[in-house]
Image 1 (cartoon, rainbow, N blue to C red):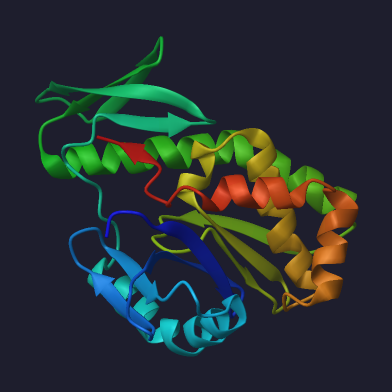
Image 2: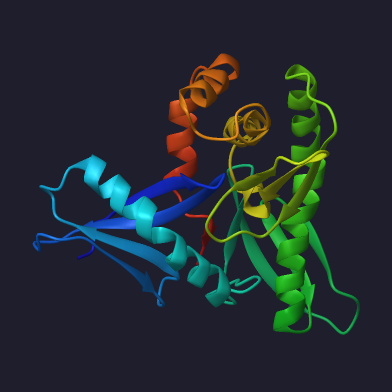
Length: 236
């Protein structure tokens, strides 16, 4: 079974992504695939979407917790040759060095001065972090002002199954995936607005989506663009 659909579900203010496969059995099953580090859901084509949603919502959380534990921290493929920054593709080059680790960007090429795999991983994370601080923080501040919100903090970290988390205690804290910087600006702004609306509407009820639509009428298109790719928005 090679054909699948990338899906996501919102549970406890988190995006949980999974791959949905169709199989001939008249049943449903959820499995964790160690090879691709992803959650697989197997369903029959004749099972209604409503039944699938209920089944996934009831059973996927424990697989998600296992995924988080399995991928504990950060897993970056050491064979990685490309990354995306603001939807632009950059080729990675490793330059062995005995000096301090650093990176340089020139004409869609990124040069990593690294002496070990640990240095390489550190630099890739630093690139994402630096870009997030430079490009996403101003966008975040803009939307906080537009939405007239107060006492909202922003942090970044590498995430493996969701794009953002909203902590609704005051002061509010929004955590976005470092990989968010891979996408184009409009998609990033949708992610920011999505998490900020959680401050006003904790759950994904109708009022939540109506509020999102108030700020971004084309949110459905942006949501699709965000979730059609896995968070490993990287290339080998």
